Length: 148
Image 1 (cartoon, rainbow, N blue to C red):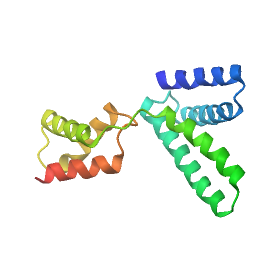
Image 2: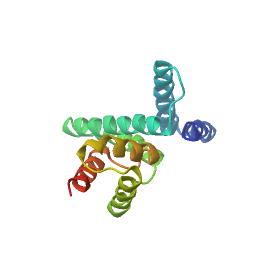
Image 3: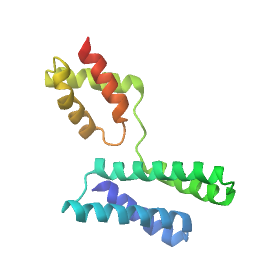
Image 4: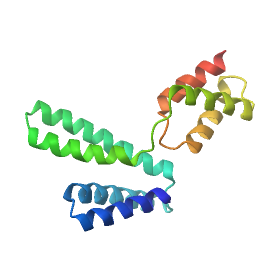
């Protein structure tokens, strides 16, 4: 809930400073969050909000590629500014060493022995570190560790 409040506060600041790009980004993001909350029937967790931010980042990256191919530099610049704002909303990603330590600790705490415990470990880590770890990277690291 704190992340949603931070986004709402960011919108207020953008409105005060009349930053049109930030206003646009925050409004789109808040609309997506509210739509997802209506769909789920409850408030979103920080992890779910980060997933929405990540999907918007992916959309912007794809748009930038398309606009570059179409030689639309004006739109590329606009998308890049919006992308920068969205990336600032994500927490800093964990380093490889930090992820390895977290994987080791979680496997030990859960008592995971083999690959069938993968889901248990993954779920716990993703809940505790929302938006800070790439799921694919984590999956590979947990599988490697459980295979030893």
